[in-house]
Figure 1: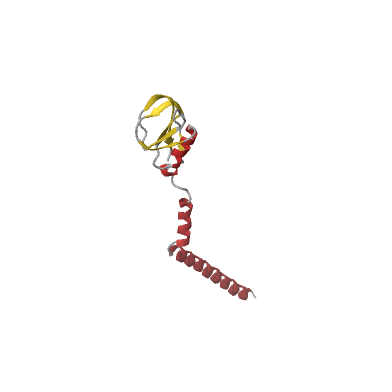
Figure 2 (figure 1 turned 120 degrees about the vertical axis):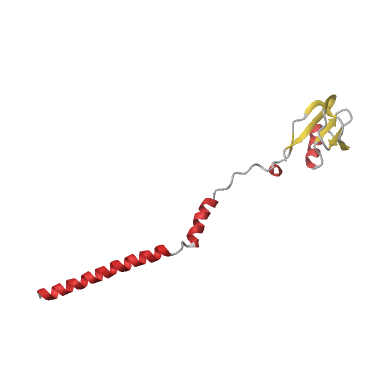
Length: 135
């Protein structure tokens, strides 16, 4: 029996050696293969998820009318005029029109003057003016 057990031990050693060789060959084969595209893309997606820093775009800035400035008349650059009841209504009308860049309301006559640019401001008793801001 001593001899039979010796022969059985030798067979186990051969099997263990073969498993070791297969493991080494398998690892070498796996390492020799190109990296999968799926793994590469997921790495790219991780870095692509951070949005780039961008500057504010002027067309995204909402427009609004600046403060109503009393006793100020913007002289010139008129493209139209209309009769309105107060400076706030004149400012709202200017804001609603793309061409309008500023307005002057004549409180004596009730006339709203819409302007295509921002001319120099002059003192004018009972005049109120404002400039469109943003976008």
